[in-house]
Length: 297
Image (cartoon, rainbow, N blue to C red; front, side, top):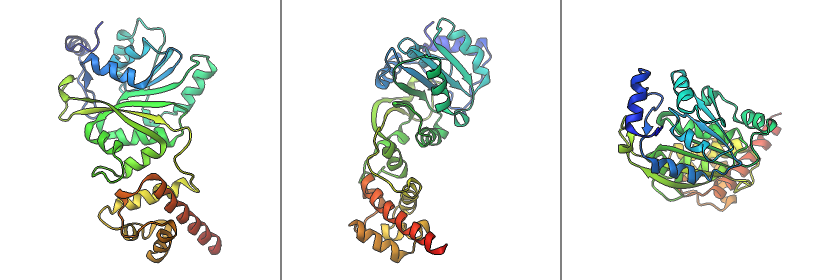
């Protein structure tokens, strides 16, 4: 069964009277080259465990199963479960879980598969993410410390460009800095809206996130680091002296001292800072905050 063929998708929708949900981002890929680029970009090997987010009717799932040792597909829409049972019937290395990815403990799944001896290689996460919850899904994966080697996902092209952007870029922002703290980011494909059924209003792109074994900076407190990033970009047009004032309860005078100690010009803006510079600021903020808490006690 050629699952990415428009005729197959039409046939399945008619057979199951499937009305696609815009809120769940149900747009199915009709181009085999895009599927190949995701599988190749993810670096899936024969010993690997693949966790797929939102399998839809199983197009990417089947392709992953052809290469991986085991595929766990997590699908929130219960209407798609019987369809997946049909489209993936020939594969004995696929398990479909009807669950919300945002309420799923991926480390628990990985540990279960380790105990079962289901794979001996790497853990790869793949998927075609719903546009409206792309960022929450990505950040939950990284913040949970999931024991995965890579994440390769398709998303709205504009969001992908923001995540991939570096310091000084017009599109560099809080999501860029936060994600790049956790991983190296590479865009592996740009996907036009014409290759989806139904056709979305915008183009997509595929990003590969290689999760860092070692972080690019040593932090005293990750929460303070992310708070500094959020504050800096929350007032994007303001200087660091102004945008960071109030972070962790520190006034403008304290922020000015911290920037001076870090060797960072207080007139710079957040979009010019790299991870290490944000880390230098955050570590000094953490020191001041801790000292303040101790004094208060």
